Length: 54
Image (cartoon, rainbow, N blue to C red; front, side, top):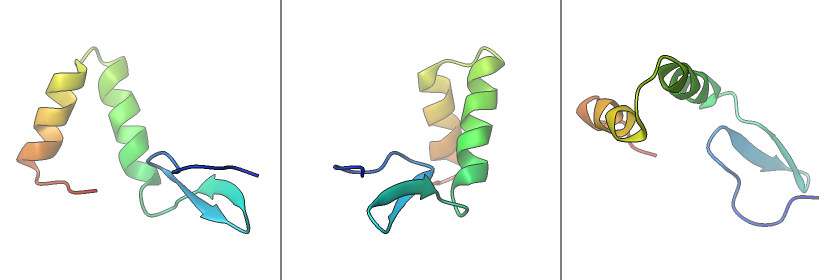
């Protein structure tokens, strides 16, 4: 059982945390940008420019 708000990329189903297919690709993209050396601020700026809202 998972208590609290689920992180981006996950959702709650039957009191368990499972992968959210609707945001999975975004999370993978964020991790890849970080692994490429982009800073948290740069990643946030890119998402803001693309008008991504969560």
